Length: 175
Image (cartoon, rainbow, N blue to C red; front, side, top):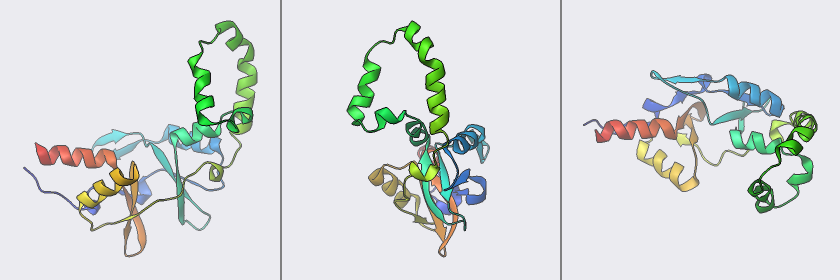
C-alpha cells in the first residue's frame, strides 16, 4: 500500500497542457482540443477542457468541450431556457427534413465557429498550492464540481491537477 502524494507529484506541467488565447475563436479551440492528447506518466488521454490565457500569458479561464459545443448553437435557440433547448431532442427527427436543412445548419455552425472563446469560457474558480496534499485537491474538486485545478507554486502557475490522475492515485493507494 502506497502513501498519499502531494499535488506536485501528480500534476501535469503547465507547458504540457493544451491551451488557447482568449482572442481565439471556437474553431481554433476545436482544432486544438481535437488534436490534443496528453501522455501523463505513460497514460494517454484527451483533455476535457482547454486553459485560456490572455495576451501576456495570464490564465484567465478555461473552456470545456461542452462550452465549445454550446457556443455553436444557432442564435435563435440561445435566448431560450436550457429546458426548451433540451426539449427539441425529445422529438424524433424526420430524416428527410434533416437532409434538407443540413447545408443550412452547417452554414450556421460555421458562422458561430468564428465567435471568440472569451464569449464561452468560464472563470477559474480556485487554484491549489503545489505542496498541498491530494486530499485538499479532492475536496476542492468535489466541492466545486471540477475536473481540473490550476497548480500554483510561489505565486507562479506551474501545472494542473486533473480528476483522472487523482482517481488513478486513489486506485494505487487502495490496491
